Amino acid sequence: MTSTASISHTFFDIPKTVADLRGVYDSERTRPVEWRRSQLRALERMMRENEAAITDAVAADLGRPRSDVYITDIAPVVAEASFAYKRVHRWMRTRYTGLPASAMPGIARYVYEPLGVVLVIGPWNYPFYLTVGPLVAALAAGNCVAIKPSEHAPRSSRLLVELVGKYLDNDAVTVVEGGPDVTQELIDEGVDHVFFTGGTEVGRLIMQAAARHLTPVTLELGGKSPVVVMPDADLEVAARRIAWMKFINSGQTCVAPDYVLAHREVRDALVERIIETIPKFRQGEPSDLKIVNSRQFERLRGALEASGGTVVCGGRADADRVRMEPTVVLDPERDSPLMTDEIFGPILPVCTIDDLDGAIRHIKRGPKPLAMSMFGGSARDRRRIERSTSSGGIVFNHVAMHCLVPQLPFGGVGASGIGSYHGKWGFEQLSHRKALLHKPTWPDPAIMYPPYTDKKLALFRRFL
Ligand code: NAD
Image 1 (cartoon, rainbow, N blue to C red):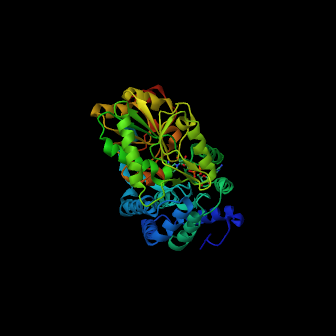
Image 2: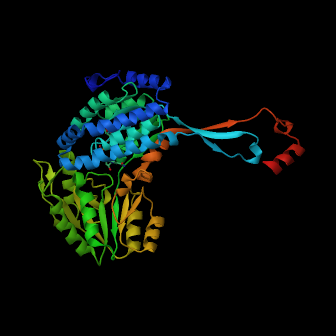
Image 3: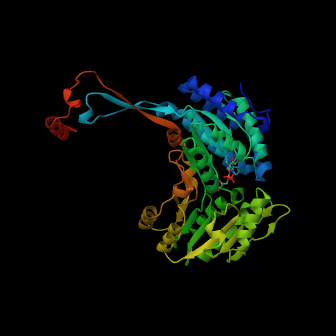
């Protein structure tokens, strides 16, 4: 049994870890559906039975309200694992397919083959959801897995080492702690797939490192996710949903509304309702929100100061406590950092638009978002925004909820990511679709073989 629980990553033998995982993979132990299902069940139990410890660790790392942790880091993972457990047998089935006349006779099918050793690299913002979530997909697909959690959520990272050591097949799944150097070393061992969740710039570095070994990557990145609010939107509901998802986890959520594009007719009424909603959601908690570290705090404070907009709510930032008030900024300058860079913090810019075309023009000027939302609008408006913009996904009349639907692929496009997961999409992403064609030895027509006379070529042209 390989357990990293007691080993400092400084002395961690990365080549041996990857070689051991590869050995287990080669033994074919992770292939049978029984192994996959046993791991998914164990993973579900791991999350359920350790709710208190997971909550403590995430709260300590991120200063998050304890109730949030269940909703964001525990329940969605349990749901994913249970969804995969019930369906993995079906997902693994061999698929038979037809043949074109030119390839007959024969039997064609394809099978889902695991990739081998998958490296899961996680961010700090949802330290369980974004490491154990991809683990569900990797296990369902029958892979061995090395997880590299973020060094910026150390209590969660340590707990993950302990829990994986206790609940899962430790010869096939291991957790390696450390920072960028450890991640690069793991990639340099030539794993079979890298599943990365994190920032776009680091994503580029991951892809560069993986390219040296031609290792395929899944990149779950960030970006600026807009919310469009049309004049006929239900403003009460829009304000509640926007404020909820924007300020949960201090705005440090990849699918949180980054900014709002509100129609001129309803902008002020919407902002008023968002401002009324914020304190209602903070009852029993400090009014300001914890930022993960001073570096992120200074970045956010700098972006707010340089925004050129009007702060209509919040705005106070306490460097000693590394906390910032939930903040709403009206019409920041479009070329200020608040509007050009991903915010990833509790600042909500609200920009004025005159019509849907204006919103679409604004969105299309930037990189493709990870998520988008639109409140209100006609069926025609919805079709228009769907066709005229490109993003990882769109939610109408809510924000970010598509990531809780395992039947939908979750992932970005362009600068917001490569590949997708959740449910069967994750299984597909971390499997290889292997083509198998079985031909009889008879017939074996001479026309297939050289020399290719004019007569043979004429026949080819007719039948192929
Ligand atoms: P990050 O990119 O800084 O770090 C992610 C992981 O990469 C960590 O494990 C870190 O140790 C590692 N890493 C950092 N620098 C590296 C380097 N030079 N070489 C190799 N590995 C390196 O991301 P973060 O700050 O932890 O998370 C915030 C970002 O993640 C935001 O941009 C957010 O939008 C994005 N995100 C995306 C999703 C999604 O599902 N698409 C989910 C959550 C967060």
